Length: 275
Picture 1: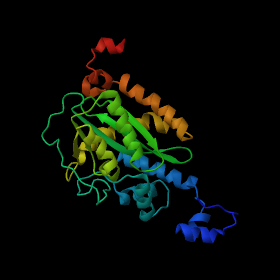
Picture 2 (picture 1 turned 45 degrees about the horizontal axis):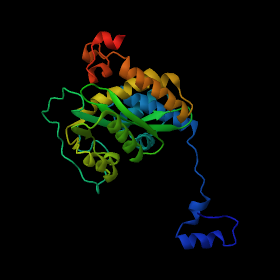
Picture 3 (picture 1 turned 60 degrees about the horizontal axis):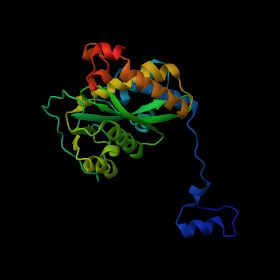
Picture 4 (picture 1 turned 45 degrees about the vertical axis):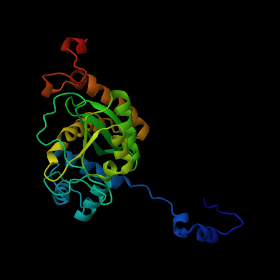
């Protein structure tokens, strides 16, 4: 938009476009290896103790020999999109201008595929940088129906994952999320309404509804991401594609009497899936 070296000075170009000159000359500073290391440690501590806030995470980092203040821990947690998991009025970071929807799963027995889906976002560390991962899960079978990676916390990658899940598996009766701004955005809820899907959002006291996907994040990270130490987003995408295929089709789930999520979702007999 701004052309440096043109006949019209940069100052005048900025005045015409009503832009700050500082934004033209700004060059983004990459995250330092030291900060990436601390973000990874915070993520590991959060997975092990999701009910810990910035104070306890700071204390754990101090015990590990890292001199870091609570303010920096809080800042990094915000950048990673994570917060302590416990009963409180705000379970996520909502946008006050977005419409909130009622919680529809109270007292409902979820016992069949496509009865209810859930979605959540997590932080994924890499050797250089990080990504955000969104996954859409069928609640009854724990099968991961679709997922996407992004380097920003916007709604676009969430919408892409939702549309893929609908295209491949049809529509659920209910779609449940937290009140994060990615899921309350009109662009996201419009897709649900257009497909006549009932929109459900966690409210006060419903922190436990995230447990299923929290367990998924723990499996993804400890069984794949932390072991592989992916170098970039391309490697991460390839690795996660393999892992989610394994998770859905080969990883036995103790809750379903040693059946895989795919076996439960498609109602396959044990011998057929094993073959």
